[in-house]
Amino acid sequence: MRENSTRVIKDHKDLEVYKMAFNSAMIIFELSKKFPVEERYSLTDQIRRSDARRLAKASLSRSVCANFAEGWRKRRYQAAFVAKLNDCEAESAETQTWIEFAVKCNYMNIEIGRELYGTYNQVLSGLVHIINKPSPWLIKH
Image (tube, rainbow, N blue to C red; front, side, top):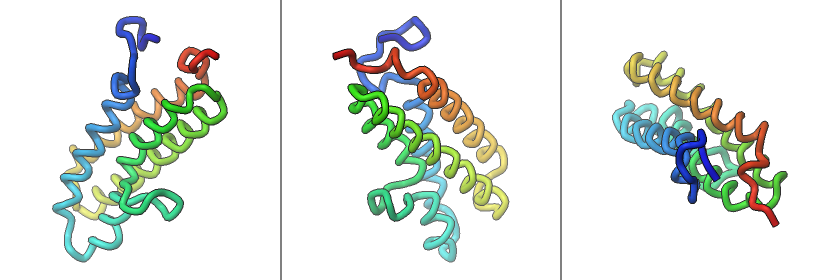
């Protein structure tokens, strides 16, 4: 399997969309450590944690990567694969919303926020591309 017809993809970690999401999640994690104490259980909690349906203490931004890894292992079944990628898409969009809040509340530098938001736009674009054309990524029986 190839991404952009240049490299062989052996693992989900080889995909650019995964690498962008992972690197952005790590930046968000580091930045959120500096958010004010009064935000510890609101904005910081939201940007770091998923909603109750997900694993406790999983980050929204990190759950993009976790869902992608899980979806990658479900490539035998198109519906399961696409469902997990849809979860990734939703988590990416939600992460963008929390980035916007962090910038508006002056907890995150506007330039860093723009860069992260833009990276998540690229992640979303990559996810949508795979969702719309999943067959090259599926494991053939």
